[in-house]
Image 1 (cartoon, rainbow, N blue to C red):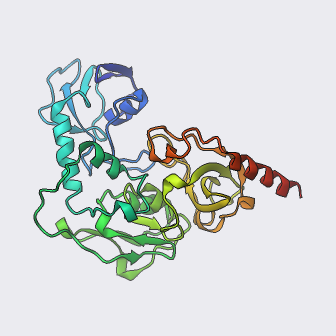
Image 2 (tube, one colour):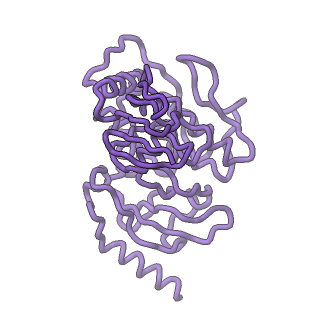
Image 3 (spheres, rainbow, N blue to C red):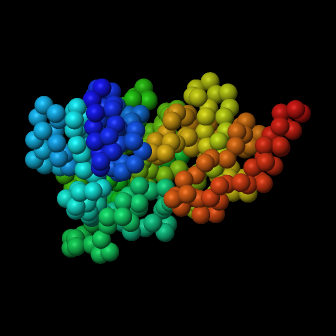
Length: 321
């Protein structure tokens, strides 16, 4: 097994592992990723936020790589040494990439449903500038309903291609993609077709910004005012394992369960996501463990909530009846 050292922390990984995957195995000093998604084949290599510096190529060829490389696309070699957070060159490059991503992205975090869960928001907080140096007019697009439950805000899109990969790999027929080239590139449906299939809602979960939003949840609440709870049901279409987002005793939205890298563990169907929004539809498992660094934890760091116990008890009572 090849051995790689990232910021002075060494680990042995299986052959074919990328630098980003190795960093996630270590669990510390993990490069940010806006386009890479481990559950989607072919993802990565587009946003360039995961750039790292390889100071030693391998034991056989110890020469450093001449340029920064995308960690999500670069395979580990035995003896490789990588600098991520300890390299000023990487930090400067990430600041530049962040500035490029924010060139056309509107400053509408106060009204965006993705606020609090947005990876671009985290990236701009850590590497962004207080003022934009871009003097030209930003791209502007009209909002589009690309399905009865999904709205597209193309102004916010960073062209990570995750939603198109979801459509290619989870659905039988893809009817949307990236049109045009360069500055006028946009996500859109082909010949004004609507995105209508059983797994289309997963595009909302994989979108790292607020470009694709759930129309049934829009403007209902800020994410840090809600309480995430794991639940499941016997679904004939998908795994049925979800996260319910409560405000009081009302389920405001249903999403797939996400891991610590903000990636969905099991993609869910639209019936679970949009049609099952009552506690009686689910078997409650318990509150989600929220990272203390997340804004979602501000109202409930440990989420020891009496209301969750009440929901579990009411669920048991309804099952017995």
